[in-house]
Image 1 (cartoon, rainbow, N blue to C red):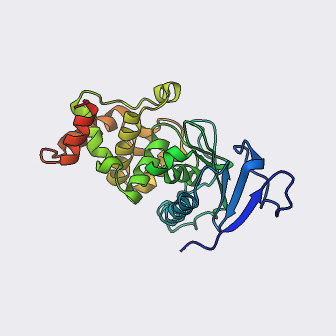
Image 2 (cartoon, rainbow, N blue to C red; image 1 turned 90 degrees about the horizontal axis):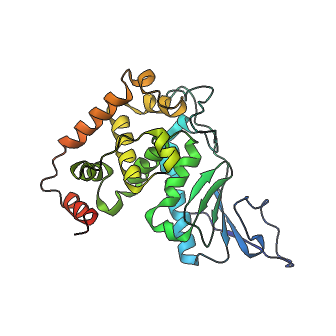
Image 3 (tube, rainbow, N blue to C red; image 1 turned 60 degrees about the horizontal axis):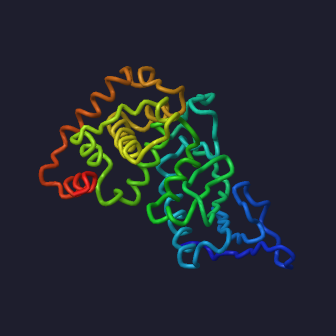
Length: 275
């Protein structure tokens, strides 16, 4: 159960208690922002954009996700560690059991009334109400806890772990959605430079989640986090196989899925085709 919330109202010219600390940079209107603190999070809600019910649901999601993710990530965590794209860390995460997980400080979570995307950075997490129902809070918490890496590995991990905790988007697992893209000749090679330059589509997120899940489940977490913490495209250094070979094996795995009687597969395929 969540600890009782301490409500701190930040208003101009009001004798209310001061905020717990300076508002994060993504807060644009401090005079209309309320801060709600729990032992793990400070939730900054701007302009009254969340009802009490939605606020409590968001904190409950974050609290459950925090439990799951810190346990699953363990020593691979690097909270708030955001570096230039593809810049490797000084050292790979230690194997599980050889070092304790790093301490996770209280995390700032800002909810803005408007915006077209959610994101995580060194300051915490920024969300918009329209994306909360699809579990973007959990997705961004993954990014904050494990730190930055490079596309498609970073976004793929967030998709994979959000699905592990809350179930698949639209009830269709990422690997089955990848099979639909393959069957419609919409498969992708997940080129990191193209994804960074052009941005990632919904297809790219889905396939990245499937590819990341396949890497983890086929070769283990330890090797995956060596890839995550290292230089961009270091597939051969970690797995002893080229990027091309790994992607070929991944798409072979996707092609081998038995989807003939999978209702989710057929529904998602029909949706993509506009049927």
